[in-house]
Image (cartoon, rainbow, N blue to C red):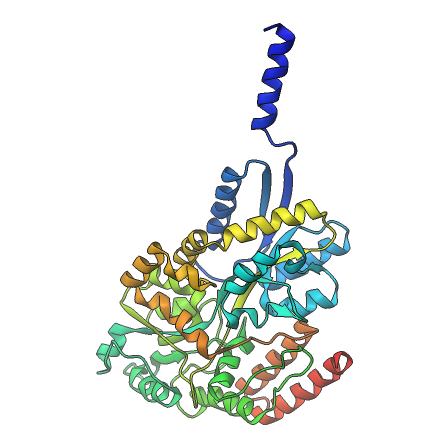
Length: 424
């Protein structure tokens, strides 16, 4: 073989071993819970790149869900959108209205539409699909659940293995769990339902448990002052005002797990995305249960979806889709769920040996999955941030005693109608 022939042969082998081109993807993601979710996302992308050396993914932590959505919109309007983001499922209509996202259906085969898109839990797809298309892929998804301190239950003479089955039981248990010192100051409240951060999300769980819902599927109508919604707000106000089982005023989302760990609240409502955080940091055995309902079981879905951003070429978007398919595959989604506590969004994930072993050793992990059969979509409407702020302000006005629940919700419904009538 001549030197030239050897060079050509070597070059040919090198060409086979090296991708013809590399695809660079930017991926924005939020973290809304405690624990090590950011590190887990980075590990996920690193593992994908090891298996796909022709693709580079720059995973960029962008703060909260609100921060991430704002940064993605700013980047898109500036002509430099990331290819992929995780953003709130509730932001779906905002992205559609702004024409910022590409439907996954346009980039997958007919077989994938059935086998992949069709494999996600329907409760999560309720605010991932609209107008016959799939705009978001469920990944960082959750429902709120109730956590209880088994040691506190035992000290109060309650069965530590049995949480409240309904709202009335939660109130009665809460009275036994509320502990005062010799001077009459409360050392431990029975329950804490945070009213900052995501107040309308948790309140919508009470609405669902009263038999109501937040909005229609088209995203252009809300039901803020329905009888069920008013009953839900009256119930949460009563926990402090008349039942005496919850601290008064606005309770912080971020400090609620800490209040639980430190014995300031014997029961808390928070996301199942905090499950691993609670498992790691609670200095006592704890239980996890469905949200106690006023009339029935009910909860909102929450959390984030993968979205594809417009303004990128087809090769980049197809590479992003491939990463999303990989990240939501049974093995990877199982690892994500175990690491974070978020709900594995597909039934096939729960059938993997690693998930079966996980649930066998930690049955609390299956509670949010089982609650999905009673779940409604969280507030997902056009002009979502504005409408959400309207209802959050109304909840604050009622919780702090500035308005009655009915007055606050009547005003919120009128304001929401003024915004959403343009989309009807």
